[in-house]
Every structure is written in C-alpha cells, then in structure tokens.
Image (cartoon, rainbow, N blue to C red; front, side, top):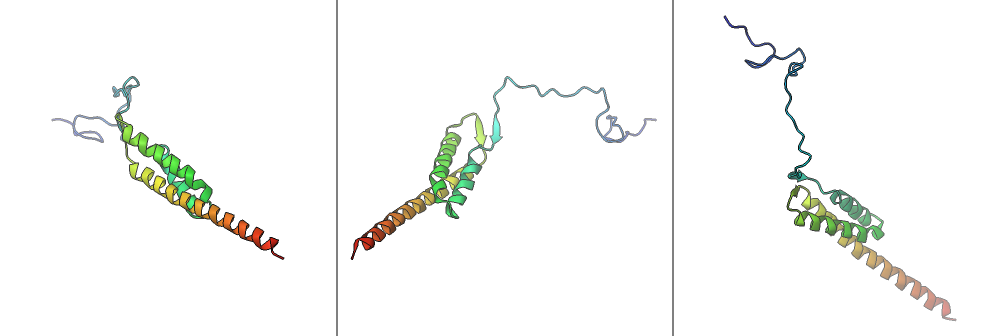
Length: 126
C-alpha cells in the first residue's frame, strides 16, 4: 500500500507550515542581464496629478510644474518600447490638471495686474 500525501499534493512532501521541504532545489530568478519587459508605473505620473490638484485648490503656481511633469511622463510612456506603463491615463490627467492650473495662474496674475493698476490710478486722482 502506498502512503497518503503529507500536508500537500500527491508526490510532494511539505513541512508543517506548508513551505517546500528544506534542501529542495529552488528556481533561479537571476535575470539581471535581461531587460525588464512587462508593466510598470511611470514615476512622474502620480506627482503630476498631485501637483495638478494642488494647483486647483489654491496654489496655481504649481500648474506649470504639473503640466511639464505630466507631458514628460506621457511622452516617455508613448516612446517606451521595452516597458509597458500602466498609468498613462494618470499622467494624462496630471497634464490636463496642470493646463487648467496654468490657466488659473494666468487669470490670477492678470487680475492682480489690473487690481494694482486700478489702485495706482485712483491714488493719483485729487
């Protein structure tokens, strides 16, 4: 008669915690010389979205920075042939939020210039 499997599938002996038996051959994952092929997140996408949101809630001077980071991330994602980035949409959102924040910045600067000019004109009147 054959013995029933011990803590695992038939033909595989496992110890009490369910990991392979010590001393069993392990698979090698040493592929340092091969380029990484797969999906990854672009490192500039999330900061672009964060800065874009911050530019909309009161810090419009961050709008151009978010626009630049988002645009750079989208370009690098589109140009990459080895790595497939999974967050192109996030990078695009950061770029769009940066554009909107930059428009707000221009509106604020123009408003300040008009305000200062009107104050200077009023102060010169007798």
